[in-house]
Image (cartoon, rainbow, N blue to C red; front, side):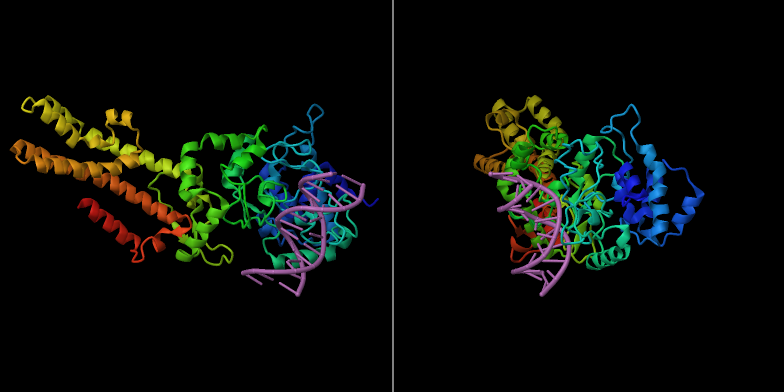
Length: 518
DNA sequence: GAGTTTGAAACT
DNA sequence: CAGTTTCAAACTC
């Protein structure tokens, strides 16, 4: 008897139950999102009258106008779409497509998922959960002291009434609606975002599981971050891990192993069909990753926190443009697309930027190398004709030709012969060019007498070098500017600490330009 | 299933 | 804001 229509409908569709905190809003959202509900004028009229309609997208628990009304609007109005979500006679319940309503709900309303609906990391889903992550079963809390009116209670935290739980002295039900509303009010006073999703950047509208998980991993992060100390953020105690997202700079965890490229994390997940992890691993250049790690750029949350802390002192209250973040975090970044930092006020907890995009990652180094190679190639092509002319010039003896080839070679970066002997990174080669230039210049000086043709060639060669250097250094400068914008090296802010008499970026840039131009 | 560990929430 | 307590889920045995 205690289980009323409300409970029945909830059993039919756990989502309905989960959302019955904000039933009218949820019903409207479901109607729009799933397109399963015909635009019932009556329903719309009532929904439009909801004083909390504007909270629809904020996942705030509604303030039911009355128990009876709530029953009718909230629960029973959901029965129609609920039925449409039921598995057909021929469908397996575990494979039945569910409406994407969960996306509107609480990706991590309460992070700790009860045993009744186990969620294994990275898409290892159990029978208790459908493919799209929608719980197939209602949560069953075991609260004893909280009366299920605090966020300790998963049901309460997720915006659900308790239903079939093992809780004691439960007041998270219709019979105690007033107390419940008081609790909601109090909770919201403490934290206005208490009932909002904790995972920012959760993917929306992605139906493919692999893509879904991948997107969540890449884009998602815990809004408040975790504070784990002993779990290494690799147990479900950790809200980030449980929500299938990497720890972020929002976290204050210790000994975190829940970051991109974490070997422990990979080991833990080894053997499972965690496509997203595989995808990420495959798209990460291991060598570059090691290089970056040993350079102090390891993208651990700790390092991010250090960077964030350091950077926040230098550039307070900055966050990344989210659109730029996503582009960069998806690896589709242009080295020159320096993100637009924008000042943000009114964000008491956000002191600096918002995502991984501000940290130095292997792909950024890769981008740099790619850039340098591309630049070098460009320069090489530009002057290849000149080299050919030298080679064919009968007025030059072979010795001179060879010397010119060496001296004139814009491809101190690209000299394939030397590259075979001693492979060097483009950056190293680019830096070596300058030394070689000095050496060859000395050589020329010691040679003493030169023909006018040689002098002309030497002048041209110098111009070539200058032009080449200018391009490479200019590109390198751009990267360094971007680098400094991203944070710091080994916790030391570049802008503030590398040079006591530091210059503003514009000055640095100008200085670079001047020096590169001689 | 009981006991322990863990970390978020609540409190001071 | 930091430290402590409370709480319930996760975990271990």
